[in-house]
Length: 409
Image (spheres, rainbow, N blue to C red):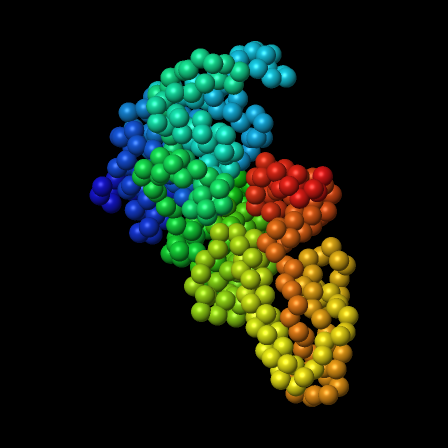
């Protein structure tokens, strides 16, 4: 596909940018569109994955058929089978009439399954059958129905990890991933950031009937050097905030910094050492990596001190205390502590190793971290699960499942 055709597609679907990886993704979408192959679109949250299923649909022979977009993460687990495959009257409480379901409605068209990684395993089995044979059964029925639907799926979940954890079927992954399309994150599209900012600034100037904001050269450098963990969605949100709040329409680095969160993934070399070039899909992944690195460092230190203590014949008969590094002080028992024992004689008989401890156990686990993060988010939003899920960057259904799993009702 030549460059002129790619630019035409961008203009038609409102895609801004000239990064090679973005152009490659568009090219693949156009090439696969005339076929009926399943497509899996991957990329971080906020990169604009929703445009690509529309490109595939509009450039296919199905363009005059139905196009249905389904957010799998927003539908409760108990009703998702009914939403996708339909149900018979009386199949369950509240089923007062027959329902056709999305796969019935989209016969001859395209279904876009966003957040496909959030599907329950039972629904994944039903979806696999549709992909293999085009057959499905309504909830509460025994009659096998046929549908001719093109499936395009998208996810920001690492499906390889989900397969390893038993949360996603490997056979379904290979069926969906017939043709992969990877959308690059905004941090890998530095040359496109200013173009996107300018477009959003123009749109908001028109929407709010005010002059468009403009960046100084130094502000452009700051903008392109930022990691953008929320990708295009975050950039658009910040542009709107600045457009509304700032009276000065020329935006300097000083003004811009007020709107850029300090948690910048690319600014953490001290934490990651030679892993500084590693990228992360969410703030939770960053936290997990930091905790793992901290625990490794503390464990090595404790082993070193333990060796010194054994060498000097020191006894460890002091009571243990609980310490939590992030809080820099003593905390309550329910705050995921690391338990350490303070040797009674350490510091009295030697001056070489002050403020050290012998390793006893590491009680900090990923489950405890996750449980505490969920508990804190629920407290922060006064039990409002929708807001807590958004804060944690997970679907509401996943949050409901985790609340039940950890007994946080």
